[in-house]
Image (tube, rainbow, N blue to C red; front, side, top):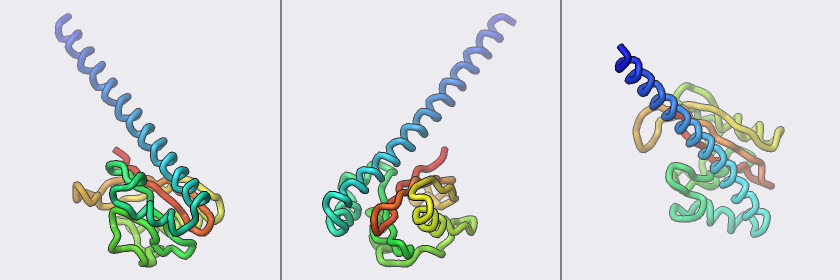
Length: 154
């Protein structure tokens, strides 16, 4: 009985440690997403739109870190930067829904215009895993564009 209780407590401790580490990873990813967007906004402010877009669209540049990347829309919802989907640049994606029908890009652009920054949750097919996953994106208005960076919620 005593060995079973010790084993059970050990299992519970391991599970709690894993949950805490996942929460820390998510917090770190959220912090990194915000940091990357703010760095992109600073680059835009210091160097202008053309240089900012060049940097944002570089798949090997500073704004792509593993699964994190900064994307940008103009104020009308046209995708102007996405290093992971260059074929979609120039498309108006405002009314393109997520896998559940939510027009999250429209929400991002409208809220950026009104509130300046924030987070939007949505569901999307992860291009790597090919599985529908929950995602949240931080967005921020930067002059004539809306910058964002999303993380998958585990």
